[in-house]
Image (cartoon, rainbow, N blue to C red; front, top):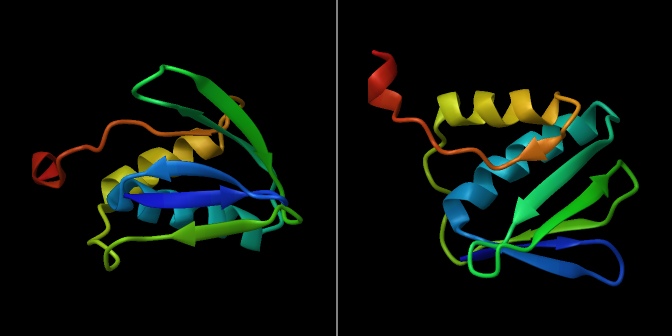
Length: 101
């Protein structure tokens, strides 16, 4: 399990390393382009939904327990699509890469 540290002082959001790696790539791409966006996350145990505003001045740190996983390009595109929507970035189910062949 990894942690997305947001803000200062930091608030931590725990995500599995695979999900966090994909979220990091989407966030960094948006921030490189100086784009702000909302990020909504739901805690699976408590079902508590939180939304935060991510901007180029937001303090972010990605902390992993394992090496960078293989990236699923289909999932990455799905996440980019949500980040570019009016609802902002949210975690959607990972598609099976073999299903697109």
